[in-house]
Length: 119
Image (cartoon, rainbow, N blue to C red; front, side):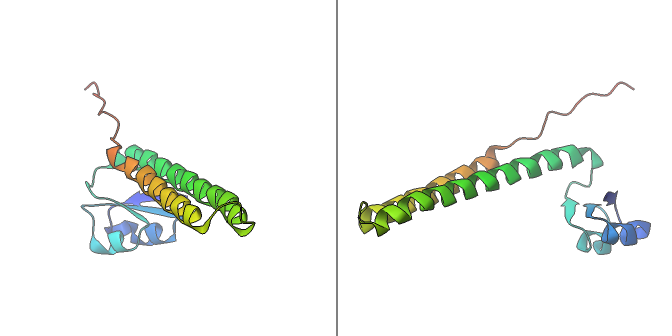
């Protein structure tokens, strides 16, 4: 269960929730006792925060798959002598650069354009 609040009367519910989300303009107690804080303090940014969290989770999973996969290939090849230690070190460095580069793609993430609502 997720609870969104700004503090005051929400502190107990935010602390007990599976996912507590505080609004940035809320009380310090609420912000300190939650899992996520929406810095802008606008509840309309919650869908963007969820999309960013999902994209970050996908990036982490891809990075782990790449790291474990490349190690699963290069370590046995190096142990059997089919790959020199120097090439294995270069492959390890290239893998690290790939993971960092893949993670840096998150910096280009943009929130969805704001929708106009009819009043």
